Image 1 (cartoon, rainbow, N blue to C red):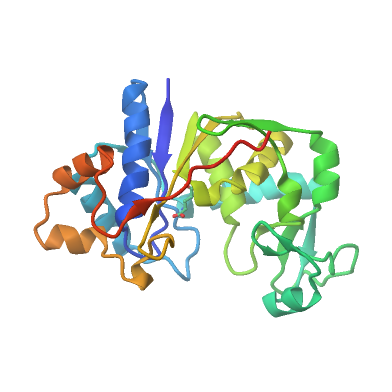
Image 2 (cartoon, protein in one colour; image 1 turned 180 degrees about the vertical axis):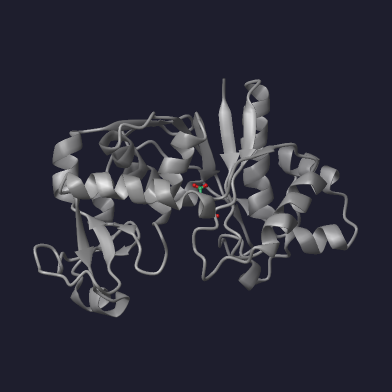
Length: 281
Ligand code: GLU
């Protein structure tokens, strides 16, 4: 059975790009006679606005979607900590106290998510009584896991390249876990068989595949869909003037008609569909 999910972060309102993503995940599950889940990714306590979760449910219902909601990330923190503990015991994590500015100044190369961490804190004695982040020792982790592959149903089989992220953070200083660790554990716990999300998160799947191997988690398939772009060819964002779904809903627009138009590839004026992702094999 196919199980997909839509996993929005309640940091800001949903816009058309989110509607497109939710519809894609919903329809893939429906076609496979499966289940479509909603998971609120509220791990970042400082940025999360709890009232938005209710707004998201109203938006999805307005689009005519039906879903099953699973517990939000804020209820799963013990799971993230247990997994991180296991990786620490295996000697695959190390603490880091570097600031963003220090990393930017010391980095010599860019990775998939900005400057590649230059390893400043690796092998250094760090006082654990203050706030620290925990990074994966990517070289050691990849040696442990051996070469890995994963399958995107659109782009085909991929060689896992978690090295593109370097020693990525798994436990953040200011939040209980990183997106990578939390989403990977949640997808496993929720029985997701087809991780459906935008092509902007394509590279993240390299890291997620590695974590699945290290933590003995089931390996789903992925479906990264092309993104909706604005007139300048940029990803839609509320801060760049894309109206939110709530704005459209409250203005009396017909959500089911909007969903039907998106399904038919009839995009509102000024919006286009970006490139899909190419196979890396
Ligand atoms: N919470 C993420 C976001 O809102 C989505 C993560 C995912 O689909 O894996 O961008």
